[in-house]
Length: 229
Image 1 (spheres, rainbow, N blue to C red):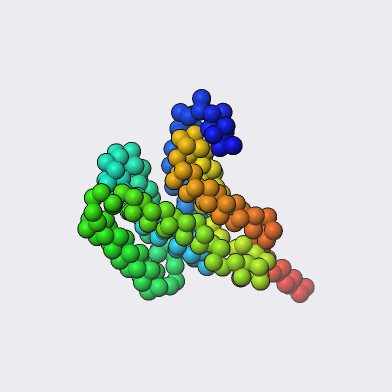
Image 2 (cartoon, helix red, strand yellow):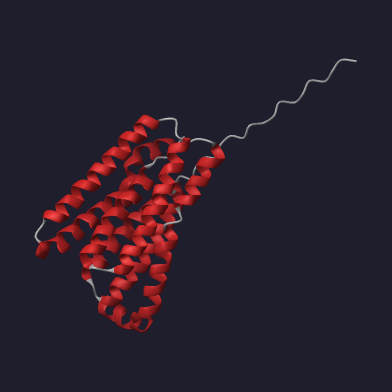
């Protein structure tokens, strides 16, 4: 079945690959929509920093992986992604009222990244590519599935408020395009990785259909009392 689909898509290999690369870069800007929401409400209430911190860690790990593979395009893309996610974190920090908590989260993310980079430096060069790639894949699955960790609250409140819709939607498009590219290349690692990601993203998009975010109550101005004649 997959071989038949791969044969059908083969003439579109370059097109699919180019679209996958473009939407991947476009996905990096999805955090700007969340930053805009933060700016409009003037605080980070109901919005977590995890999408931004996860983006920083993922960019750092993929940057290291790019150096391992000696892939210039991968290095350039992830340098750009790292810069964007650092900006998103700075915006979040500027508006949050829980700065100590954010400092702690930043420290944990930094320690986690440093630990994995140190591991990659010490690992056997013959094994590091496969093992480090597996670690990155596992962390990617964690990031994609992280909005589902609050599933109980979502069902209880019947609302997806706080879930990063722009990141989930763009992630669905990106992983679907890379899934198609994996099928064309007949690359099982790329295929399985993005198939799982598509299922996770699709499950989260379904929650937005079942439990839409509740609109925030508008602040109505009280009518001015009429002066007595």
